[in-house]
Amino acid sequence: MFRQTVSGLTRAIVSASRRPLSTMSSSSETPVADTIREKITAALSPTTLEIHNDSHLHSHHKAMEGSTSKETHFRVIITSEAFKSKMQPARHRLVYSLLKDEMARDGGIHALQLRTMTPEEEERRRAQDEAGNA
Image (cartoon, rainbow, N blue to C red):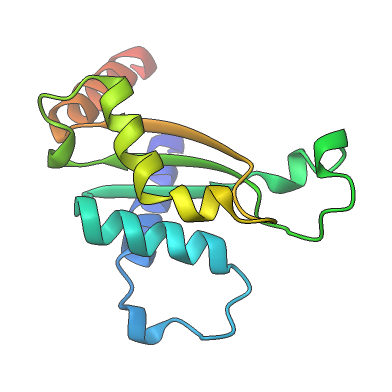
């Protein structure tokens, strides 16, 4: 039952990440997350894209003192064919280069945790998870 819930949630996240830009509000409450989604989708055509805003877990840190941004810490899971034949550091550099402006901006991305996979790697991970839950 838990696995079905997680799968349903993942499908919901992926379908939300594929939302056409024209349906996004110009006065979005999540402009940084929207930009992450737009740039990664345009450049990498991901089959899975999960963007988790973990900023609320870090708001008490000294580095965040005085910050009014609610979008500073993200955990992003990306599955894309674009990662084929690339080692993890190269995959991460690719994503960092896409988001360099958002990382340099005041009130922008302060921390970015990435999990990058090819579709085959994601399938192996799912199979391992299912075998572990059996």
